[in-house]
Structure formats: structure tokens, C-alpha cells
Image 1 (tube, rainbow, N blue to C red):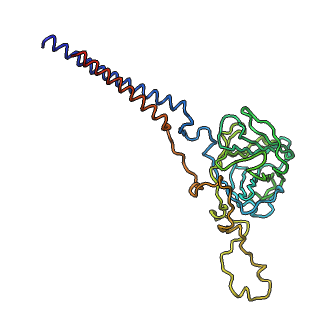
Image 2 (cartoon, rainbow, N blue to C red):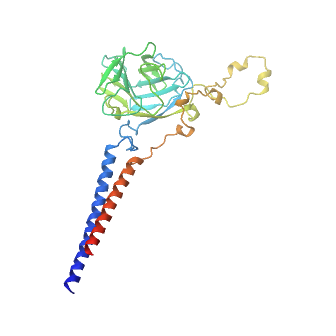
Image 3 (tube, rainbow, N blue to C red):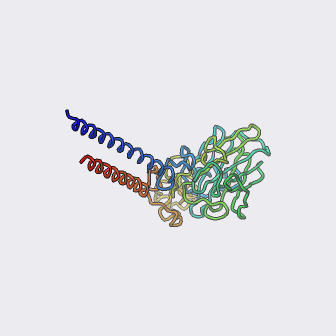
Length: 352
């Protein structure tokens, strides 16, 4: 092989090597740009399993109630709170939550089965995150209702680093707690009933779900804290549970659990009408709230109504980048490709 042939072979190998090196550089640079764009654009389509939201492992549905409860610190009837889901906070505590979507009243029942002593250090807590934005510290959209020593209610709003006490409007929050027995536990224990007159008015407001929520009861005599979500802190909204969606149908429409009044399905016979005695007064009749009809279904404001299918929780679609960011990456790759083409063309001209 002549020197000229050897030189051409060497140059060809060098060109191939340079092409491979440049191609690898393009790939590496494109990957770096891609990762950089993902890192700096968290709100342009990036959904990383709701990083800032509450603890999605503990979620619940907000149900339309069949009737608002009497706030007296005890069960007025055996089925008074059966229209809300019973949620366990610990082995010794449970709560339920429901909403009237006509008045937008919110109501909670909390029971601490192991606590029957009156201590000044006892407290109840209900925390709400308006937008379920989570975070490591309470923000302006976070609120905390705290009842201290079974005597004093205080309302707090997040300030970015902690809590600032604020004043509820007159009549906005109504509450009562007593040591009583209940259908959940026959032994006397502390029971709290609390009502917010409207979730869309007043100092404390919570829009359409999803919202963050935390419920807690502390017994100073034993030092036991029961909370939902478990092991959560009032000062860390990302640890709270989540009200993931809502239903315009009462819980009884989905559940076979006992309801506040019997559901009558049999059609009355003509003999019942023909008998002049007051026999009808001894026969329980179905109440409109137990079998809601379309005309009786409360209708929230138009902007607060989701599409029909949105009553079922949906899993967020994971999106890595927005279209804008994807376009930037493709533009970068095109520029690198053009540079590579120019480089190859110049190398070929030099060989000639």
C-alpha cells in the first residue's frame, strides 16, 4: 500500500472517529439541556406525583349529608352521623365529616374513646389546606381550628413560617364537646361536634376538592395524640390527608350501613288507606333525604360543578415536559445537527 493510500485510510478513520465523538457530544448535550429544563420548569406540565400536595395515601370523599346534625357534643339520635364516612385516627379515636351542599355547611364529629378526663392540656385540631398545596410550613391558604382544654376555640391562618391567630366571623364556627357514650363506643368518652356555617364564606373558606385536611385529638393525661393522616403534624401540610373528591349523593346511596331512618321499599296497599284508624302513624315512612330524587339533589354554583365523571378520583397523568420545553430541546438538537453537517462538509472539502 502506498503512502497516499495509507494517508487516505488514516484520514477516513479519523473522520469516522470524529463523527462518533461529535455524535456522542450531541446526545450528552441534549440530555443535559433536557434535564435542566425539567428542573427549572416545575409548573409547565411537570406533575411528579403531587410533590407539594398532602399525603395521598390517606384520602376521603366529601359527601352530601342527608341532614345537618345538632351541635350539642353528643349523638342526638342513633343515626345522626351515619351520613358521613367513619374514619379511624388510631385504635382509640375516629372522626367523620360531611357537607350540606345547599348551605355549604361543613360538620365534623370527633371521638376520643380512651379519654374521659378533663385536662387543660387536651386539645382538638382540624386543619384545612384550601388548594391541597402541601408544603413544609403553613401558607396563607392553610387554616387550623384548635379547641384548647375543652373550653376555648381559636382559629389560625398560615403565614409562611407558622401560624397567626385570626378571628372567625360571628356565628361562623359552632361547637360543643361532652363526655358521653355513643353508637361507636358505649363507655363515656370525649365527643366533639363542630360546624362551619359555610365553606364558601367567612374567614375560613375551602373551595371545591381536592383540599388537604388533618384531624387530631390529644389526651394530656396519657400524652396520646390521635391524628388523620397518622403521625402527621399540624405544622407540615404535606403530611395531612386529602379530601380527594366530592359526591352530590349521600353516603347512604353507596352504602348498606344502617341509616338514620328505615328505608321503606314496599308499596302501601289499599287496605291501609281504607282503615280509618291512625295506623299510618305507626308505620315509618321514607324521608326524602334517604332516597334523594333528582329534583331534591342540591346544586352547587356552576363554577363548582365538575363533569359527571369527575366524581370518581382520577390518577394524574404524568407529564414530563410542556410543549414549549420540548420544542426548545428539539431546536437545540437541530442546531447541533446543522453544526455536525457543516463540520462533515468542511472535512470532505479539505480532503479534495
